[in-house]
Image (tube, rainbow, N blue to C red; front, side):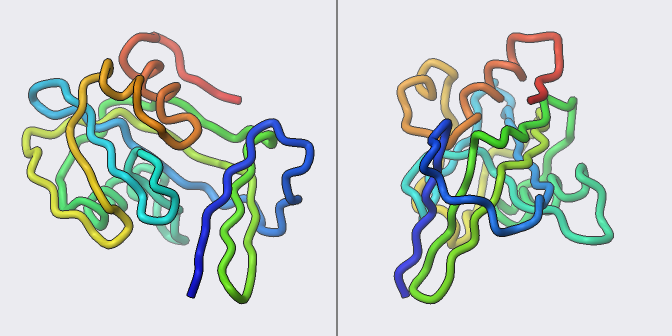
Length: 161
């Protein structure tokens, strides 16, 4: 089965969302050397922060911790809220041979820390590592990854859009 994730930013030709807003979360995770964890997604080959969608019966912070555990088998502590990313100008479209789901981004980003930087990836990733902010600036990443890192490390305000 062929699957693809297409991302549209400020594109008037983007498909219209056909899925209700679903809150999700992502995390800027710092290790003891202040390196940031990113993984390369198997569906886009773009670098991303770990995270995923919220389930009924959990809080957004519980979602963050669960997703990190599922994706990385890593224990972290949430340190602060980085921002809330909800722009209607950022649309994701997930297509396979039989259907297409399109949605507006709705992600709550957290800064997390860990003393354990040994990760065990699941099948959502094809590569991963701990990187410096300078290295990340040169990487091809999902929308908002670099902005969330910048906000987490250098701004005293919470981002929202």
